[in-house]
Structure formats: structure tokens, C-alpha cells
Amino acid sequence: MSNQQSADRQPIQLRVDATDIARAIFWTEQSLSVRGYKDRIVLTLAKWLPAYHAPRGAIDRLAGLRFQAGGTDCRWHRDPDNPFHLIVELPAGAEQLDIALQSLSPTESNQGRIMVSDEILRFHWEECLLYPADAPIDTIMVEPVLRLPEGWEWACALEAAREETNGSDASLLHFGAVDVRTLIDSPVLAGVHAHRETLDQDIELLIVADRADLLPQGRDELECHRRLVAEADALFGRRPFGKYHFLMACSDQIGRMGLEHECCSEEGVRATYFSNWASSTTERDLLPHEFVHAWVGKYRVPAGNFQPDFSRMTNELMWVYEGLTQYYGHVLAARCGLISAELTLQAFALIFATYDERPGRSWRPLGDTDNDPIFTARESQPWQSWQRSEDYYSEGLLMWMEVDVTIRQASGGTRSLDDLMRRFFAPPHGDDQCRRLPPRPYDRADLITALRDVQDHDWEAFFAERVDKVTPHAPYVGIEKGGYRMVWSDRPSGWLADDQSHHSYFDFSYSLGLKMGLNAKVIDVLWDGPAFAAGVVKGMRVLSVDGTTYSHAAMQDAIDRCADGGGTIELVVERLGRVKTLAIHCPVGQRYPWLKAAEDSPRLLDAILEPLSEGSAA
Image 1 (cartoon, helix red, strand yellow):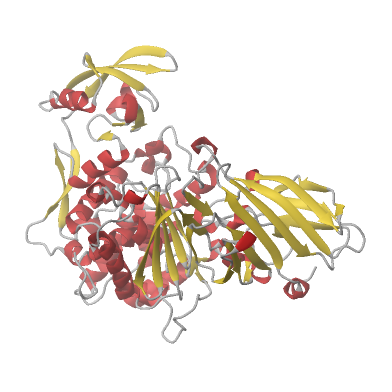
Image 2: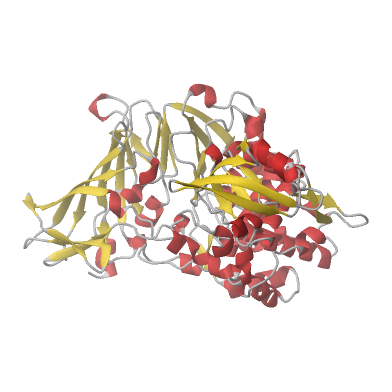
């Protein structure tokens, strides 16, 4: 079928019933025109989901498939070369194909991220939508209808053409016709316990929670989120969207997540994000990160990530897409007051220490980690420090910090990385600011040209050295020329202490080369570190340390005894039903990374973290 025929076809009618929350089943009906097709039609589910950076389409969740044309059941089979393609045999003269199916959402975390509870629902259209595989997704139109549990608050970036409020169609949402790309970029969040906050006239924050008492009770926390919008506007100058929705779930039942979309973002945080505000520090860069993606990754998108369909993508430039966003996620969090500048500097110290002491950098360049989401599926790895794992996020942060500091120094403080954000990632002057703008793909050469326009420098060689080559150390120039230096302390920084408390682990990476989690379980081992040399592996349970039943405090005491000249720590461990004793040589006492201000050096990092918008708090 030609593209013109596809464009002339009537929209797909998509109707989803999402009220079966007890069983987490989405009941779906579809109707689509099959005029112009002879004998068969090939339908597909979206395979490559941009925010996942991998072929993670939910084809495994489809069940109960039934195809009918003119009341007659149609045979179907799966393409053996592409299991996302369903080949449906059509009777002669068929004009419309009717489809019934269910999308079976996970009911336990070992099946995937939980999206449905008794109080909260996340819904992704791509999990239910089958569409012709032979047409560009921007030419296929869909008229979606969604039924939600009655009385639930909801939000979606799509404009609801009509919402039924009475009778048998209560809570039925009728949306206007949209193309497949836009539909899949517009998830729905709904919940029983909800708070809706208007951050400005075009930006809304919907918060749903497991219980009403977990919703924000005061104004201070919400004001930080309002300042986030002001700081993003001050940074970028212009928006690539008309309306924007933060879809935030505070829950220990729904899986935690962060997913970017052009006109909305999904944030899943711990249930106590607002109710125990003091302990949620290390989660508070999530909303800034996802918001920055509206410009970096969604509006300006790496060319390989923008394809005419969802059958393939490439992951080049993840060190921009995610690394630059990770940098500005932290910077904006500090500028708007979600995280203090002091804690942000402590976060930078931990990030540098983590990636500088990552031995895998001796064999694997940063750029190759762009591919990690494709073949690791974000599963836990046995030796993360040696294998590396999506290091483009936080090592990318360090690299972009160096770019920022380099521009500031070379220009005498008249320019910064902020100028690149306004000139390259924001819409040009004159674009309509009241609508969703089409994505603008770019490649590495485009980025380097834009950087040269901001500051004359050999950026091509700069990135070749840090992205393409094996490098012995993580980027340090941004810290050093930013007015700080790395130091070590025998106590964790406030940032690390908060993160350990919030995520229930303790970090002994810089003394023993391991991290401990809940139930005395080893959750990470540094390749070639002291614990590695002693035979400790991830997944072991530590029964005792130097003859004392394991606790984090007992381990700290044992390490403290090695502070003067080193020593040996004896662990009794259990793995796969076997118990054994291991002796670890501990060369130093407790050791944790901090940043310390350098004497007689401009503190450019302090300037970077200062608010841009009038009235924001640092």
C-alpha cells in the first residue's frame, strides 16, 4: 500500500478499558480499514521505544488475540523473522478489520515494572495498539478512547475531546485523532489519591499516591517545583511545547521510573517523597532531568533515535541525550532549590570517585556504553565496574561540566554552556510557542558546529579523546578548574548518607571495594579491589565480620581498625548453600569522597549552580 493510500485511510478506532485494576488487565478493541490490502495485512506493535533506548515493546504482554473481518474470524501467524509482526489473512473483499486483545500488565515485580495498583494506574498506549507495519507512523492516525476507574483523577498530554460523566459511559475519555508517534508519546497517569498543582498557566503537576497522607501537605516543596519551571525558562528561553504535564506517582507499589516525553514526563518516586521530604534528597533531580529532556532528546533528537517507524533505532549520542541531561538535571535542581548547592557538589564528588575508580574504563570507551540498554536490558550485572553500564549518564555529566567550565574560562565569564542550550536545543525565535513543535534531528557534526559558535575550541578532538578512546581517568578538569578538588574523608558526605539511607545500602567501595545492601547481602564488588581479591562476589550474604554478627556498624568498626597501616578483615559468607571464611586485606580505613574548595581559584562551580531566574532560591 502506498503512503498516500495510508494517509487517506480512516483513523484506527482504539478503545481501551483500564478499569480491571484488580487483575491489571487492559481490555482492548480496535477497528481499522483494510481497503487496498489483498489477502493479508501485517500489523505491528511498537518495538523500539525512544525513552527506553532499546527494543522493549510489550509484545510479550499481548494475549487473547482475535481478528475478524465482516464477522468472520481471520487466521493469523507471527513473522518468524520479526515476532513483533503479526500477519493476518484477510477474506476477499474485506474492508474493515476488527481486533480484540488484552494487554496483561505485570502483577509482580519479577514480571516487569508494576504499572497498576488498587490506587494508581499508569497506562502506555503502545502496549495495546496494533497498526500497519508498512506505513510511516506519522501518517497513521488513531482515534483513542480510554475508560478509567470512575472518579479517579487523571492527566495526559493529549487533549480530551470529550469526557463522559454519567451513565454507562462514565469515566470514558474520547481523545481527538492523533498520529501514532504522538499517541505513544502521551501516556496516562490516574489515581484515587491525587493533588493537582498548576506550576504556570501551561504546566501542570499531577501527583498521585498510595495514600492521601503521602500527598504534599505544605507549600515549600511545591514552590521548588514551580521554581524549576522558571529556571528551565531562564535556561532555554523558549519552549518546544504548548502544554506540559508532570505525571508523578509517590508509591511503593507502582514501580519507580523516569521516562521522558515531549509534552509530559513520568516520574515514579518512593511513597515518602513528600511526606518525609528531608530523606528524599537524592530523588529530587528526577523531575529536572525529565523536564530537560523536553528540549534535549525529544525536541532536538539524535538522528539515529528519530525514525519513520518504531522498528529500529540507534543509540548514538547517548552521552549527549542522557549525559547532558544528567548534568542539567543536577544543575537545575540546585538552581531551583530542590537540592542545595552544597549537596550537589557532594553528588559531583561521588560521581567522580565512582567513575574514576571504574577499572572497566581500561578496555571499554565511554561511547560504547551507548549500546548498553540494547543488550543488557538494564538487568543487574555480575561485575558492573568491569563491564561498565550506561556510563554515558554520569560520566557524561562530568564531561559536560568540563565543557561548561572550559567555555566560562575561555570567554572570561561572558559565555557558558547555557548559551548552547538556548542556541541549539531551544526553538529559534519566531516559532509558535503555543503548540507541540516537530522534533529536529541532529548529528555529532551539528553539535560540534554549534559548540564552536559558542566558543572557538577543538571540540572534535575534545570528544574524540573522552568519548571514543579508552581513558584511564574520569574527567576531572571540570572539578579542578571549577574551583574545587577531590578529597577523602572517614565519614560519608551528606549526599551519600542520604542516598544510603534512602536506598538501604552502605558503600565500602573506597576501602574494601564492595557495597552492602539489605539482609547483609553483597550488592556490588569492585573488580580487582580487596574484596575481589579475597573471592567475594555479588549475591553473597555476610554472616559475620571479625567474629561479630554482620551489621554495617560492625563492618565500619572492622575497617576503622585498619586505618593505621592496613590490616585483615575476616568475613564468614554464604552463597548457594555453602558457607566459607574469607580474609580481606583492607589497606586503609573508612574512605569517602568529598569536594573541597581550592584556595585562590575562582569557584566556577558555585556560579554554575546559582539561580538564573529572578526570585529563585539557591
